[in-house]
Image: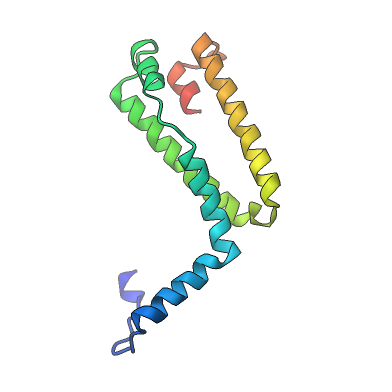
Length: 131
């Protein structure tokens, strides 16, 4: 695969001002700032909860490996969400995307309450939490 890459030699390099201008024009594009702003805001609003991790570890008995697996699953789902937005939801209005993702977040929060209550529908707490 690396052998298929072609690199042009002795290409004139644009000045720093031109490069910064090109980056700025790209960032100003709606196709760039809207999804990146959405991802940024949702990640900023996600507060790491030490009490939740402590609950998973002490009450439900999750191991460190299981907690790390949950983190990996969260990152994979974040990537899948970004790809889904890029492919399907970019044409939706900003309001529709925000409301639908907020409702989806509410659903997952309700599932966390079920996990706290021990209602996992026959699944192990780890599978339910990763699920």
